[in-house]
Length: 258
Length: 264
Ligand SMILES: Nc1ncnc2c1ncn2[C@@H]1O[C@H](COP(=O)(O)OP(=O)(O)OP(=O)(O)O)[C@@H](O)[C@H]1O
Ligand SMILES: [Mg+2]
Image: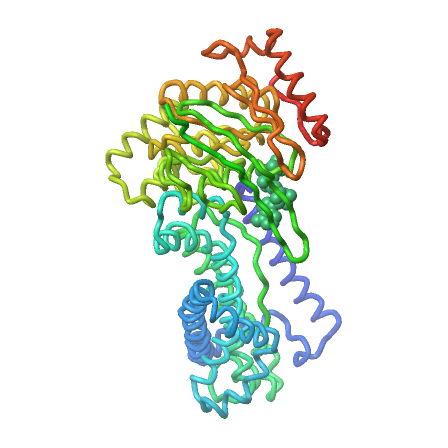
């Protein structure tokens, strides 16, 4: 577990070796560039199209992050409501579970009809995809409290609000963050899928354009950009978690789907 | 003096689906203020259930419980509870965990911080106030849980196999500390344990229960001098008591489930 220098150097060396191997293989086997361009071409495409890439990445970021933020707000609020209201738990929660089992990205064409062609249909899909892991994990975290702690609260006449604030909410944080980490990555996927369906901006749109013109190098650059975007967001959540819930290093999570 | 606790003909039935479990059957006893009582019995005979009924957390199916002459209907107020596991809040320090009941009960915080610190000192946790549960040993966690039960200065202490998960040496140590606390603070203690020796060592009276449906087989008085010392465990009287209890338990059916004291 100790962060030793070999933990940093090893992956760097590995990736360097991978790049070199890629370059050599492409040269030796003479793969056509539209199937697999050498890393060199990727670099050139990246440098040459940086402004375009930046613009579309920003669009996708806004869509994904917007959907994600919405899923946090509504997801956590909804989870709390479900845990505290038997009625919601009996009515709306099963509906949520059914929706959860559907492929959310399949809503993308419908969403265009419902919300329109612009940014909002993408935010809506990103939200839809990110919402469920947040809700499901938070509900579990709020409910799975050791019964002895609740007995302690009853004996000492603790209020419902105190039980929520001092026990349930902090107890749910590790679960919630597990869900949030799934959600943030899924929200990027959701935005991209929505862009595939109908868009004139964003990395999903851009990767389709690159495909049409057989610009494989640029398409790969876009995919890498997406990976960086997802990872960056994931790490952001990780940092917030360390600040907010340092005790929650690793907790099993209820997996998400898209 | 009138007894502190009167348990009168208490039975408890659990129904889960079509299954009916008679957990407790017609239990009656009285406990005087300041007594140290242990309850032993085979696993599943209703010891935890009995503690919950006395604390008012769980209603009896029939019969009644009175504490201080008042019928127990709601959860008791002046009671401290120690569970088999420490159940500490991972996100709170030792001190923060101990103060949880104080916050729930909305008692004056500063004066209880003083009390908490005094308790921490008493159980030998000094210097660990700001540590978090994952930084503590099992014994230290259970000490914290003991302090948490005592911080509101309850008159009655209910302990459900509190040291069962600890190794024999730590358990002996905590048993001695508990007795010191009990003698100093004049509490009434009901202590559930699987260990016959621990029961004999700690108690004024040992209540022996039968396998399910849990009935009270016998109430035995431990006529051993106080303060108790670990050396007493090798006295003939001590051996006599443990033998007697073991005999009762095996006659009551379920002796195999009883772990003979690890304190030997
Ligand atoms: N909430 C409940 N619902 C249904 N049955 C229960 C419930 N609580 C306890 N029981 C049953 O009542 C019986 C007594 O349980 P209890 O936990 O009091 O036993 P115990 O003597 O404390 O056992 P152990 O020594 O293993 O802790 C068991 O058969 C148990 O299955
Ligand atoms: Mg029990």
